[in-house]
Image (cartoon, helix red, strand yellow):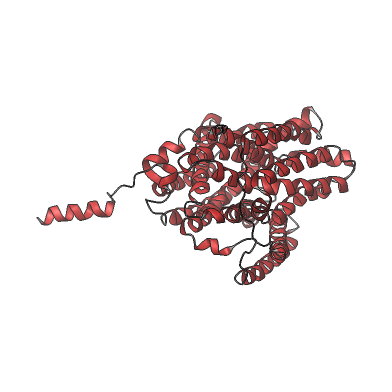
Amino acid sequence: MTAPRPHFRTIALIVGAAVFMEQMDGTILATALPDMAHDLGVSAPSLSIALTSYLISLAVFIPASGWMADRFGPRRIFRAAILLFTLASAACAFAPNVSFLVAARFVQGMGGAMMIPIGRLLLFRNIEKRQMVQAMSWVLVPAMIGPIVGPPVGGFIVTYFDWRWIFFLNLPIGAAGLALVGRFIAEIPGEAPRFDGAGMILTALSLGPLLFGLELVSHPGQTGAGIGLILLGLAAGFVYLRRARRVAEPILDPRLMQVRTFRTSLIAGSVTRIAQGAHPFLLPLMMQLGFGLSAAQSGLMTLATALGSILMKAVAPHVLRKFGFRDSLIVGGLLACFCYGLCAFFQPGWPFALMFAILVTSGFFMSFQFTAYNTIAYDQVAAEKLSSATAFYTTFQQLMLSVGICVAAMGLEGAMAARGHATPALADFSIAWFLVCGISLFAVIWNMQFRSSDGVDFSGHTPRTWSVRQALRDMRGLTNS
C-alpha cells in the first residue's frame, strides 16, 4: 500500500522555509558588520567581502543546479544544499578571523545557490498544476519576507545578543528542513545531460563579475572598479551566448527564451524586480537619513511590505481563477508601481499609519506579481526542461535584484550630485523612487504579451470571449442598424 501524497501546503512550506533561510541570510549581515568587524579586529568596509563572497558563490553555482538535480535527483540535492548551508552557518558562527569567515560564507553560498531553483523544481514535480498557484504563493511569502526582515533581525541580534547568533539561527531551521524533506517530499529523478564544464566556467566568469560589479557600483568611491567588473562580466556573457548556440545541452540554455510564456515572464519579472531589489536599499536609508528614525524604527516600517506579502497568499488563487494571469498581471503591475511610487511623496509630517498602509499595499501587489510570474513562466516548458528552466530563471532573478540596488544607488547619487547635496535629502530619495518605479512600469507592456488562455491549467480560469474591441464592434453594429 502506497503512502498518501502529502498536502501541497506541506511541501510548499518546507521549500519556503529553506528559501526564507537563504534569502534572509543575504541581507541580515548588513546591520551587523560594524560589530563583527570590531570583534574580528578589522574595519567594517573591509568586512564587506563576507557579503560579496556569498553573492559570487551564488553566481557560480546557481547555473549548475539544474544539471545536478537531474544527475542525482532534486530531493537528494535539496537536502544536501540544506545540510551544506547549515554546516557552513555553524562554521561562520565559530569563525576566528576574516579569512575563515569569508571561506565559510562562500561555502554557504554553494548551498544557497541550490535551494531556490531546486526548491521550485520540487514543487513542479510533486504538486499538481491546479494547486501550483496556491503552493507558489506559500513559497513566495517567505522568499519576499526574508530580505526585508534580515536587517531588523540582524540589528536586534547584535543589540541584545552577539553577532554569532545570526548564524546559529540557521541551525534549527536547517535541521528541521533536513528531517521534513526526507519525510514528506518524494524523489522524482530526471535524465541528466552531459555536463557543460566549459559553460559553467564561462557563466561563472560572467555572473560573478556582474554581481560583484553591481555591488561595488552602489558604494561611493568604488564605481570605477564596479564598472570594470561589469564590462568583464558582459564580455564573458557574450562569449558564452555565442558558444551556447553550438552546444546541445548548455548549462544555461538560451533556447528557453523561444518558449513564449517563459520569455515573457522572465523579461517582465526581471523589469519588475528593479523596484523590488531597490526597496530594501532605499526605504531604510530614507527613513533614517530623511526622517531621522532609528534603525529599529525604520526596520519596523520595512516589515509593512512583509505583512502585505502574507495577506496576498490567501487572495492570489481567487484573483487568478477569476481574471486569469494576463489581466491580473497588467492591473497588478500598474498598482504595484503606483504604490511604490507613492513612497517618493513620503514626508515626516505624514501619519505613520498612512505610510505603513501604503507599504502593506505595495508588498501585497508586488508579492502577487511574483507569485504569478514564477508560476506562468513554466506553463509551456516541457517536463524534461524544467530543471534547466528553473536554473535559468533563478539566475536572472538573482541578477536583477542586484541591478535594482545598483539603479537605486546610481539614481540617489545622481540626484545628490545634480542638487549639490553631500548627504541625501528627501527630494533625492524621491528621484530615486521615481527612477526605479518608472523602469518597472515597463513590465506592464510585456504583461500585455500574455494571452488570456495562458496558465489556465494553473489558475482554473475560463478565458472570456468578451473584449473591449469586440464590445466596440457590437456597439458600432447596433448604431449602423
